[in-house]
Image (cartoon, rainbow, N blue to C red; front, side, top):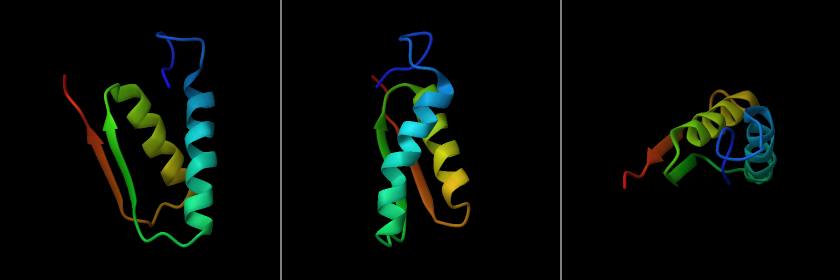
Length: 67
């Protein structure tokens, strides 16, 4: 998924998509969220923001890949 300015997907829309995916994991009882192999930093930031909005207490690992 790419977000603005690389596509028409806004920052808020991207965050909501990430939240939708993580909500299922959190509802299932995961102990940690690992966000990995992001190559666009702005996407990773939105994923982290979404995770924190859902549950600010769960451990979170965020990794970026450099090309």
